[in-house]
Image (cartoon, rainbow, N blue to C red; front, side, top):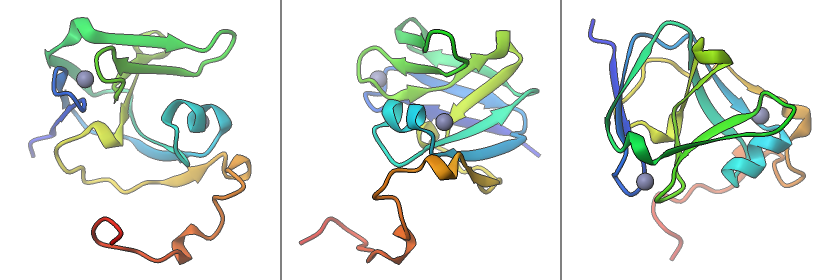
Length: 135
Ligand SMILES: [Zn+2]
Ligand SMILES: [Zn+2]
């Protein structure tokens, strides 16, 4: 089976390819992930064995490490999109699920730091679903 997964940032300057399987997929609702995504949670795929190859724009990748924590985020310096980062001294590849352009064969394992979720993030599965933009 071909385990290649491709992705890119919003402006298209950064493109990458991930080879190898993901071991876990978590939706993290902690306050740091809410800040750095601007959203309800960060959806990240994790792998200790996959490798990343930057196809373009590697010079635009910037990494922010929150001082005194293990919270790290890589992003495109042109458009700000989240892009993959190597963490724990390169031992762990963290790939933002929203940066991917190809399908992955893994479903999220869990919502994590769920007790820290935003006050408005309650029963959101009950909210109406609109297939396009609201009219
Ligand atoms: Zn970009
Ligand atoms: Zn988090």
